[in-house]
Length: 486
Image 1 (cartoon, rainbow, N blue to C red):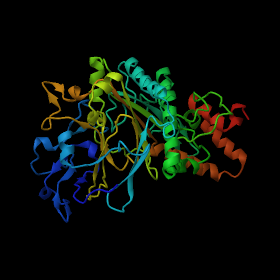
Image 2 (image 1 turned 180 degrees about the vertical axis):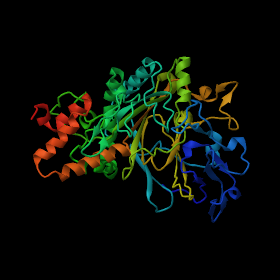
Image 3 (image 1 turned 60 degrees about the horizontal axis):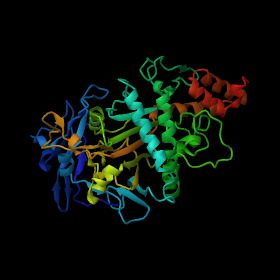
Image 4 (image 1 turned 135 degrees about the vertical axis):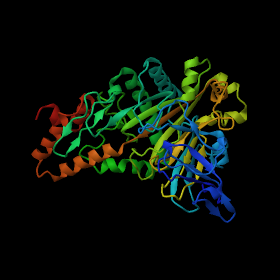
């Protein structure tokens, strides 16, 4: 799929679009205006406190302060894309063909014949040959995420992420590493130091041991396994690109993956349970973090649930802390329609029931050259959507309905009246971190430098005693001699 030549470009002179508003500027207002044979076209510009466009921007042509009121790691406000801004950016729409194949693969390119920016897959949910996950397992993942959010009180899962408001019906957990070693909410004791490689030892987030969070991971695992089957069959190079860094560092391999492969392919239900040796080893997605978010509302939502749905849309940002994989990593979208939700919507609306959950992607090379804009429809009745790209390179976010740039009407978010009842969307994000990849590679270098098995096991033991219980048990699976004290 190629974009037309008249597509406007996204400009990000600051290189960090999530740290300021996005502006839609007239061509003459920016030195890097996008010129084509058909004329000069508008440009999206990201501004910061110290670097904002000097021209006069009308209110409807800039992104709005995110309704969550959250800030990024530098204390600057987070901002959200609006329908007005996105519409005027003239994005390329990406959506499935209703009468198309059971699995539809689309490759997004910024220029004709250029490199693939993203892979988008639409899979018919009712086709057992294309999608192996039963609706009951989809429902378990959605209900587990909602249950965790409903019971956790004021605690926020993933709230330390500087780029995401982590609001709404949202649960995230996984492994991380941190420098300097200071206690945080996700690692109360502070990480341990491994002198041999001069790095801080990774830790599992504190919420990972809570029963509700464990249930979220367990119910999301088969969703990831079903998505891995699609990738293995229709885009094996994409899945292989995710595994290449794991295979290149066998000393720790998938130690920090969550959920591990044996939970995704059904060989075990929990992380520490014995493997079913009779079960087939299936494809899996290697990831150090799993983040589950549920958009939309059920048939009879409480006022609190509507509020969560309104605050849970993603701000526009770039995930610079994320690892880069050759062909990117996936976000998996699975809709759930109640009988009321399906019957109350027109046929046309069933094909686009949650415009606010559309995924906006825009190139950003941070060198003043800008990029192209796509709008991917992620919630379509009867279709699962998988979007694979490097979110560390592309600006992305969701879309708030607005009136001339204002998200509110009489103090209430306009989104609240645009959400159809009985339509929910599971959004499963799987990703790894650059710092954790760096630790794994540094450990592999030290492991390879050892001259004999005794030295290698000594290095492994040094790591073993510094890991927390869940990760320590995982390392013992890889090195059984650790459990026996040898």
